[in-house]
Structures are given as structure tokens and as C-alpha cells.
Amino acid sequence: MATRAPLTDSDTADEAVRATCDDASTCKRFATSRGYWTDPYIQYFVRQTGERKAPEINRGYYARVQGVNHLLDAFLQKTQCDCQVVSLGAGLDTTFWRLKAENTLPKKYFEVDFPMIVARKIHHIKTKPPLSKPLIETHSSDSLLLDGHSLDSDRYCIIGADLRDISSLEEKLRKFQISTELPTLFVSECVLVYMTTEQSSKLVHWAADTFHTAMFINYEQVNMADRFGQIMIENLQRRQCNLAGVDVCRSLDSQKERFLSTGWESVNALDMMTVYSLLPQDDISRIERLEFLDEKELLQQLLQHYSICWAVKDALSLGISQIGFEA
Image (cartoon, rainbow, N blue to C red):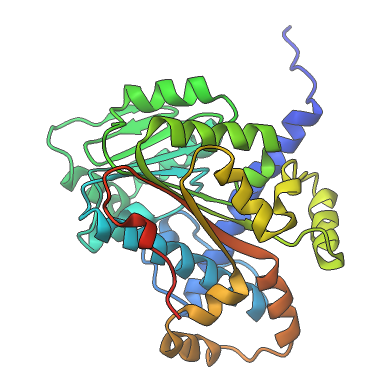
């Protein structure tokens, strides 16, 4: 009788990273149920709103979603949607469906994640018409290319791959017609931090090397060398979640250096407290009325320990290096 191989430390670590996908999706589901932002699609991936989340968590996710969307939408605008988007470690993200509803889809929207997560997402898409219908509406032929770990249509593609294996990643993206000539936006949210510094540097270097006009948005931890950062690391370690790339999360400068040293022309980085202060203030006033926040200082600490970093290569001079947050 065949026996299952024992789990290695790296298997356990990967499993813990996969669990963060559910955490993020559940938090987003709860925040949208409280009215922080509108996402009519997340309910099809996460049925229950789950237990109540603290107001500072909801505001943190609001800042994350609005901050990343602001940069992503600006890229689509600058390129007039004549571009492609590659969401790395996409999890159960719903951006494709939002862009379809807003009529701002890029030429093609790619998602990459662990095969196990991709299989789950494909199952949701296949069995829920509000998710499958937008794919079919943007697809020219009768059949979608579908197997257990990938789904490909004219405008949307989801691929099961390990981001640490770049040759396999590139092979799969090329198989599904990624173009190295089109302006390309890469998005990663709390993904690179789970790879070693060497692995994440290779990935961002490959992106800069392969695509001549590109932007890379990276949302993840920052200022992790201080006491609050240490507590965050310890909390994750208790759940077997090792931040293998935490060295790069020392400061905004170390975040920027990862991109500057791997072929990107210009890089910006802001902590989320700053981003929060630069988001449209009428909407901030609205969401701050949704729930009473007792611990303003805790929200401030949380936001100071996450950042958005965005790097640019603009060979086509589209003006994507001007993308940012305005005071």
C-alpha cells in the first residue's frame, strides 16, 4: 500500500501561506458587508461574512484595496487599457470582475497562484453564473480552455504555478499568450514577503528584464525591525507562517532598493498611513462613520507597518512614471 510522504518544513510553510489567502478574503468579505467598499463578487468566493473584525482591521483593508486600485486604475488609464495585468498570488481576488463591470478591462488579465488555490477558484467560477458569465461574454469561441489548474479565455487567464520557479512560470504565461511587447502591470499583495529575498529579487528582475514597459505594484509589510514589527512576526510564526523575505521589509528604502537593484527605472514607496491620508477625504469621512474606533493609535501603528511600493519601466514613454498619489 502506498504511504503518503511526510510533510516537510517547506510543505508546512506553503500550507500556512495558502491559509493567508482565506484570511484576506474573509476580512475583505466582512469589510464589504459593513459598507467600506462595494464588491458584489466576493460573496461567490466567500459565502459567510465570518466573525466580526475589529474596526482598525476593516480600515486597514479599505486602505489596501483603495490604494492598490488607485494605482491599477491609473495604469489602465495611461495605457488606455491597451495593456495586460498579471496578478501574482492573486488568491480569491475579484479585480477582473470589477474591471469588466466598469468596462476598463485590459487586453488580458492573468492571475497566478498555488495550484491548490487556483483549483478552488476555478471551481467557484465554473459553478457560479455571476462569475462565469463575464468570462463567457468576453470570449469569442464556444469553449474555454479548462483543466484542473488553469483556465484560459480571451480576456482572463488563471494559472497554477509556483512563483519561486521562474522558468516554469514564464513557460505557462507564454503558453497562454502573454505578450512581452504590451505594457504590463504586475500586482502582488503580501506575496513577496513569503519568498526569500533572493527568490523575490529574481522574480522582479525577470519582470523588468522581460517586459520593456511595465509597472510593478507591491503591497506588504514595512518597518518590521521595530517592536510592533517583531510582534507581527511572532504572531505569524505561531501560525507556522514564516516571513522568509522580511529583511526587505526593514524600511521604505529597502523596499525601493529591491526594485532599483533589479533593473527598474524609478520606484516610489509610501507607508499606508500616508496613503490613507491621501485617499479621497470625503470617502474617508464616510467610512470613519461606519464604526466607532476606540484605538486610533493602534490603527496608526498598523498602517505604519504596511506599504505600497510601485516601480516603473517606461520604454514607450506613456507617462506611467507620473502615476502616484496626489496630496
